[in-house]
Length: 298
Image 1 (cartoon, rainbow, N blue to C red):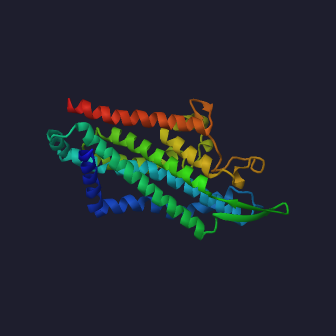
Image 2 (spheres, helix red, strand yellow):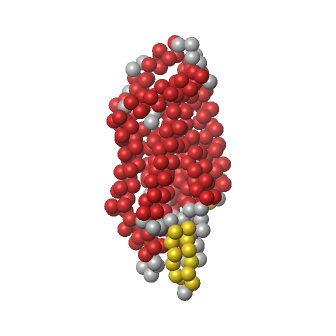
Image 3 (cartoon, rainbow, N blue to C red):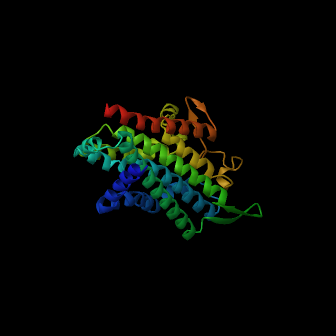
């Protein structure tokens, strides 16, 4: 346990000392947030009926932003945080670590724990930033009048916040374990940079974060639904829109960005189907990360 903690601490220290790497890791989600505020809000506004109160449109836009922000941050962080592992492999640092009296599984597990820890931490930070933005924009609590009846819609309560935090933890473990495993076969930082840039560019579309699956042709939606990270996005969307006006299908007959839409293997599924699918993938990928270390040692 001491060796694992020491190696994990080493990875964290390398990350914190590299100001450039740390800056771009934190700034990327903030750029997404800024682009949304500057350009994308009107797109979400246009999806609401014209006769709807401005407060509801604002809340809908901010909730849609938060869904996309959390989902893409969990995905892209897992990729970018693997850079230390790739750099170590390129500089043959892994060979030195494997020669040392340290089990190879511990070396790989330290990369995984480091990646998971920072991925979850950064995403939680973005969750707080998103809530702060909603507080500034006055969309956490919205009072509206429907049919001469005053209604209050709370974007978050304690139960919902803890549920979203739980999904962030699951998404952090899932995405980090997937990319630590897949990218462990790379030992070239140039190739990693190209892959990282490509994945970051398409992440929001690939996992249905900013562009919901129901807007895709059915075959493409079914393909995207096979990606485990897509179901993290689905669960964030399912729970975050609960008890809000735009989750009411009696009011909204047309599908919108926050529409709860889950498919898997050609079948429509509930949120718990997404949970089982992501938990199964998480267990598989963590196991593969540990197993691969032992195989490489041999």
